[in-house]
Figure (cartoon, one colour):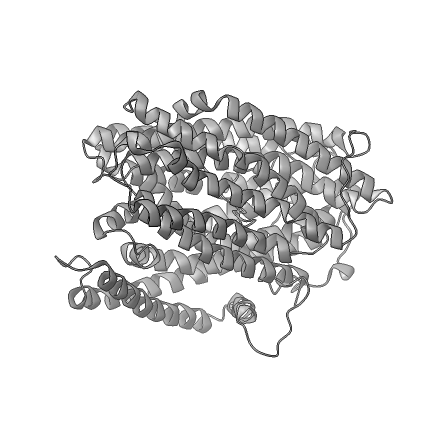
Length: 616
């Protein structure tokens, strides 16, 4: 198994466990504060803002700046001193950013909530946000320490620590439900400081645990961190160029996120129905469900790929970097295409199956934006992988230039939709704006990326895979649709008087039957088309199963089995010195590739986000 494959498997296994416990957290969150109403939207806004800030910083400064420098530092004789300086610099930056954000909480929150909210409602959103703001520091610390472990190919604790964060948060929500029950329709005045702390505060405590626990594996590999101030010798000259453009990208995406949040938090009030129209909370639930396959596969593969890609580019081995990127693109696209089919076939049943504490009407509100999000899975996965390759070249300028184009397209689409359609559709239209903007601007990203890889990205193999996967997806969707029609008549999920437990059972049965049919057709068509990636992906998935007697690799993964399919790194021809910056000059920041960061990404990483761009 390739190192990307082994490392991705550990990341995927940890991410899978994280997503299971995270989904339990979402179930308890829905049971505690609901998915509609002011309290639900205030909580989602409060927890969203720190993640937006962190995801954008991590997608810019951390991934663009710190990770390549970590890889380079580990090759030096004074690696310990350099890493101490990098960690100290990151902690100092994070403390400063977190402190400023906490001081500016009332003003920042105003930018994310609609003007229709009154003072009492705004105060509730401010309180939730303030309790969540320290997460910026701990998410950042988690990323820096985790990427050092990733560069040393020690993925275990990095991948699994987020499980502890979810468990702590689940305990807080469980205690809240035990004491107060469902508070979805409670007045704003009901939310006292202790109740806010029990929901938002325990989540922040969990995120803190997730970060601090990573010092343990760091010491086990001989890296005993000691605060060491000083910037000399850690590559700040190149870091400064990338950081400048990365910060510009942060500001750009923050502005777009504010526009989307204004639309989402204002939709229910504009429609005159706080509990019957999808708002920020419903949108965030859809986003969370869409993130399950994305973070499990795309983020895990990207996380495992990036240190290896950085090493190849640092060694000026462009051929090896291209092979790793191509292999990751093909495997990720194949898996994401399958999940696109499943989510398109079963948006409401999947929502009910995964969040059984909500009603059928709430599930329908969540299902609306989930459809365009499903269509964005392949696009946003390609965005993530290509962006990581840009940052491996220490190029911050190109991602910013691409983000300008992508955000302008998204803004135009969103504003046109808001003016043309009633508020009942706004949450779904926000998702459509993101998906369509990614589709429209994807050719530009690919063209810019080619320049980094000597004019080609193994495009023929990638396109052939996409064509085969597209044919299989259409066949699987047709078979799944024909299967679901009689199931809906026999087991309607919206039957009057149906209890929540029975609805959940029927939703699970519907999802299971339709998914089995879609899987069989999808795999069968790919086999008939002789899709070589099917064998690779199937082998990777089988390695995730807990088969007795099989010993997992130390650095484990789920990633791309054919990363070395075109040859080994040792036999690859070495690129000329100028190849480090593509076919242009040797200064990375003056070339021309690009992209925007996917949100969430980084939170499976843990959210690893990364991800998709967190523009909600």
